[in-house]
Length: 335
Ligand code: NAD
Ligand code: TYD
Image (cartoon, rainbow, N blue to C red):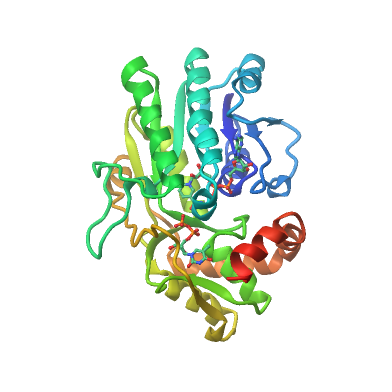
């Protein structure tokens, strides 16, 4: 039996990862350590009575975090816990440093003390900065983060890798492109666009709408993480991409089209400060070392995602009717 400590397991990607591990692996136990911030939702995961434990914990609180390591034998640490939204990092960067940097340092120190078998730091292509019209990020691209969010993630990556070089700790880093799919909090572009379209509300499009992201369906990211844990080499970085570059305006038009909604719902708004123009991933390393290839193209992935948001209206209606309502109004309706 191997025990995974998954931080941020009630968030979007963490919950999809835990579901996958508990469904697919017979010999796996999962400990979910989550602070339950606004982005967390216990309803992202049904109750798993066996081989699953939850600790409500802030990874930035080392004493609290130490309890998990003292009470359990941990084999793998997969660190998803983070403040994850660029717009929020622009408005209030402090908590991004606290959670993403200090929290990661605490996890690294405790994981080293307790001799974990592998430590996987879940990171992002945003750590590389912004591309022009050509080229892709490889693992050799120098880190050049441009938002407080990406700066905090790049800092955590550097700390993680320093533990490999300095202490010989078995650290791996995966850097993935923009995810979308079930259980994504509706502040990110794709769920926001789907939900606003369903509600016949304007969809805010920043700047000229032609910024490019490489989109990946969350199940593909989860598969890639499992492969990195299984076959990746410690001390290495693995880029993960979806082979699906698209302009924001085209993503929104595709969603409106699928829902039979008019393009007049698109509302061009003031650009995000420091808005990265383009992300694109060269993920040939993970493909050649582990065999990873994304299974979903953008159209199939978005269709599946739309379907999920239609069938799970209660999930997002509950979010919109709670504390998030005021923030949502301020950020996305009154611009
Ligand atoms: P999310 O915002 O949906 O979830 C984050 C989770 O972390 C929440 O459950 C939250 O409660 C928890 N958390 C936040 N602060 C915490 C703290 N101090 N202690 C314990 N738990 C805390 O995020 P996500 O989109 O699922 O992203 C997960 C990870 O993947 C992040 O590290 C993010 O940087 C990375 N990533 C995300 C994307 C993407 O497109 N969403 C792409 C690449 C990498
Ligand atoms: P987002 O989902 O916030 O992810 P990230 O900033 O981490 O890439 O944004 C994706 C793209 O969509 C990004 O170029 C910003 C843009 N965007 C909008 O145009 N309107 C919106 O309301 C949001 C949330 C994002």
